[in-house]
Amino acid sequence: MSDFRIGFGVDVHQLVEGRDLIIGGVKLESDFGALGHSDADVLIHAICDAMLGACNLGDIGKHFPDTDDKFLNIDSKLLLSKTSDLVYQQGYLLVNLDCTIVLEKPKVLPYIPLMCKEIASVLSVSDSLISIKATTHEKLDSFGQSKGVKAYCVCLLKKD
Image 1 (tube, rainbow, N blue to C red):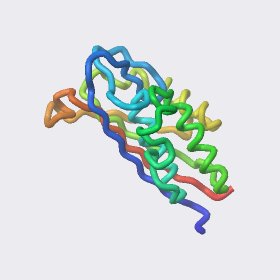
Image 2 (cartoon, rainbow, N blue to C red):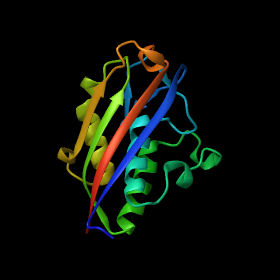
Image 3 (tube, rainbow, N blue to C red):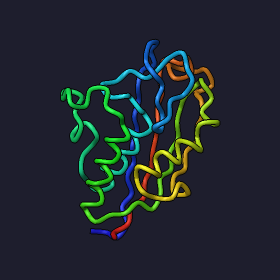
């Protein structure tokens, strides 16, 4: 096994009325939220997939299936904590995360520092290792029309 491993994750959720919009462990002020079995935290789900993928452990659906009621409405920070445990059991430590959120509205920028702190806290690392950026689809396609939210994540792990 290599001393360094790279993982990539992506997640998408439909936006609907009547749900909270939780991204990066933070509730955003919004008239709509992400639809999903858990709290539908698109960013944390992408991070989990990136970390799991880097260790060749499958994806979030393998470990936390949406067919299992014990994960119904679960706080995705708990999924991230369990993912982190799986990665650390493989002997790897997080070097950094680089993430991008695709959301037309609300604006994500004011929430990014708190998202970094929340994610870093769950992973027991410095928030300087967590990079989060946001962009829009410039009103193009379903994401640009505020029908969905998407997140990408690349992670680098190193052998402990």
